[in-house]
Image 1: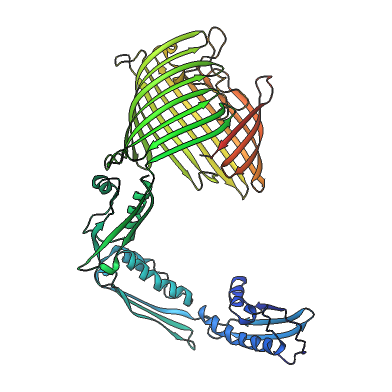
Image 2 (image 1 turned 135 degrees about the vertical axis):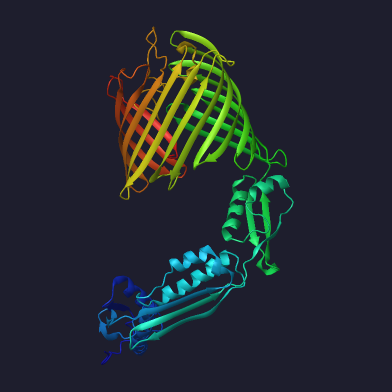
Length: 565
């Protein structure tokens, strides 16, 4: 209540307080008041402040009806304080208006649409609810959005009304929607592009004549965008050109450059300095075939490879490819040179990425006191799955893979073997700044003559992504000369706690354990360590100091740069 105001025009600062309602509603009401919106206006003077204050009483009364309160009691006070003015509003909400009847009716072809049945089943308004005009508007829009997304372009609300009976504290809602006919996909128009109609048809999950849905249009746009051929893609339903129950689609495509050149440098404790160079021809022909070449050089391993990729092979097989690779590796435990040619396919099966392959491998290797050469024809199959809220810095996610491979002396191979490898990593956040990171790898090999098995198919342990505190591939069974020669089995694991206590900077403590074995009675190696973490623009940078518990070696430094998964 306002009795008098000192005429001090130089005082213009205003504070507004609303009580009697919860914090969220108070803030919403406050934001809608003119006295709050103009509290810093240069035109403020005592008389104008009084006018704003008085209008706030009426505005609050109107705004509260939006939330279903039609009979609130509102009292106010405006007083001069040392630093300006204070406007206070005290609210008693009273009884809310509740919905007695929700009359939702759907007519037209949408009446037989299962999506509208689901809408009616889970409609946002129901009898007994407190009236909220914002919820009513949202519910009304949900009908129109669903209709537009499913091709009811001529539909309209024939009745949309809220009848309120304040004296009885009840309201009735009437929403009647006539969908009219549902439109179907008509002609699909593409511009001239580098890929042919056959490939475009594989990327097109839509057939003319099918019932229209926004989801199908989005799927088509995603297919084209993810194909790797286009920088930008637009798929638009030409609603203005709809006729005779059909709506045409127009597609706009902006092609990527034909050639892609890549280069990168890096560093890892296992490999030392690294250099990567690559070239890709994105579209060799109108079927979308691609050719990629890569060269990867480091202090430990060098490789040159080429892949001829035939994507979108069929409805069930995503990709078929042919590849070749030359690789040279020189570690503390072995030296090898290998050349491989092969083919592979990739597909999705039950949510997993499946890769089947056939590879002819020629490898010359020196390990322990053995120097051998082997030729193997290796069929293999692998399944993998990755899930994450963010693959660059994951707070909740993981990766799991299973691979099977083998060879037979009866089929172009110098040695028979069968191998299975399971690898996994799981990350789980704890609170806002901490994570638990676990990983494990288990492998087993059955081989007719272990000495003939190339080092690339043997198991070793130690290194950045194995058991920190030990050198890269420094662990495993030893030969007669006391040098590590690798093993038939592998079992390694890690448990790590990380806390980002200073923005993008943090630390970690961890323990790694396991080994490569010829018998699981062989000793298990352990290490413990601490690390520094930095979420850099290029990915997480990990710098670790690890100590092997079973040896008297000095503390080892490990540096890894890259995403979590």
